[in-house]
Length: 137
Image (tube, rainbow, N blue to C red; front, side):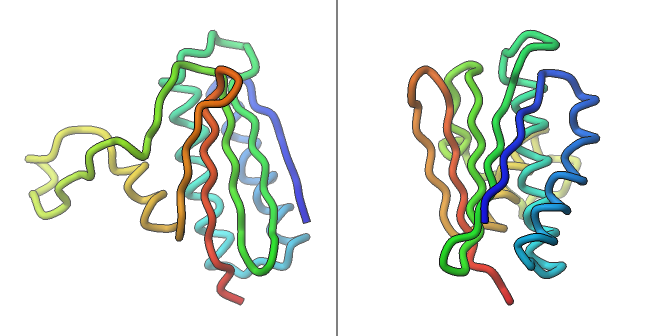
């Protein structure tokens, strides 16, 4: 089971994420918990690419590939924006009160916590982030 979609550098593209992930989840037979994880992770990462990836407005920004293999959900996010490995970002100090925390970093933190493994590589001048999560059927 595999699905993929391309999104341009435009915040309006975010409106296409929910139908894309929901259709994939339904076809793959994912439960509500896995659908929630899928939607949070994809929305966070695609939003980051559109907002901060350095891709000019209106240009192709990000390729999302979703698959299920051996009871594992695989989320691949590929963009040809500025080189950036989000996995190297320092973990936020969640023990601090919200008003004392610096802005940023929580979305990637949630993506890491919601998935089992994460892998980044820079390939053909593109950022490729692959996240895996055991399906909770």
